[in-house]
Image (cartoon, rainbow, N blue to C red; front, side, top):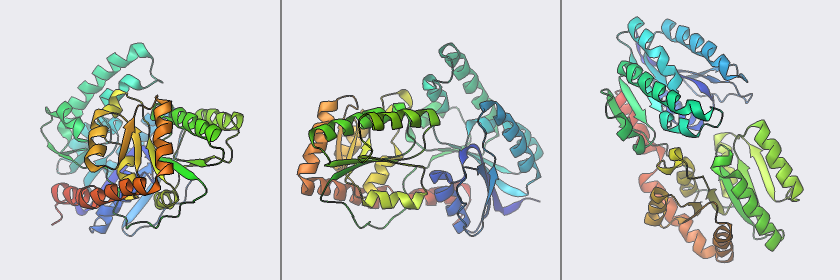
Length: 378
């Protein structure tokens, strides 16, 4: 008999302390009275203890070819579990659902879609260009067959919904808003103006645009600006970034933290003045609201973001910052200089963003939707 108070949540790609999965969804469900077994990738960081939430670490691998071994392992763990609920976070794990559905006809399966994976294939540089379209078509067919085994489909973005009108299970959007945080006490310096970026660090997320921006600011205004970078990046990219920092003598200007525990992100926000989000205009970003925009609002930080139409409308609606092409260096510099010179004005942008966050954009609102609709918590 399946245990109605037990959940198996699993990922073959995400690390155990992924912010959305661990700190938001898994903790929310454990706090709601469920036993949560969470399987995810070991990243060497010490596991955070939380009542009724058990983290099971899967070994990291350097090869994508090793992933099927993880799928096989997770399938057998799920088959042996007595949980009523199974909550997956990766499109590749949809392949397990037809067999699991046959083994567990009464179980409840949820697929949590973090990104529009078929659309994202178009920009995956590790996939040869000639293979992207055929692979995209195969994935669409695979999704259609496997999603028929789902009871619930969660979208992290409203923009995904139109692509999945054919799916007949219960569908809902659970936005990746930040957990509710009290107003943080600002600890900024009068000596310099600090820019911050938090999230995965990649070329298409604007790492070299941010580095070019801080280099130019340093040349114009020596020792008056800082850049904090928090988030994971590949070893090859880190080598390139470090080479840029060294060649332009930015060692005291650019601070690279790598992946840090979620609570520590807020300490970095407290010591920052402006949140950057200079993503490139690729299909998977153009119609998705970056999580960091909401985090910057929660931290009372004004925003300087890419001028995507949806982002521009959102930021203008709340008067919480401004947008600019990530490739327009002169305008980026001007926007930063203006805020550094008129701190009272930029602080008001941050305060307006904080107010909008409190009223509309925190995780508590989304958590209730997920608990009530999928897990029948009343």
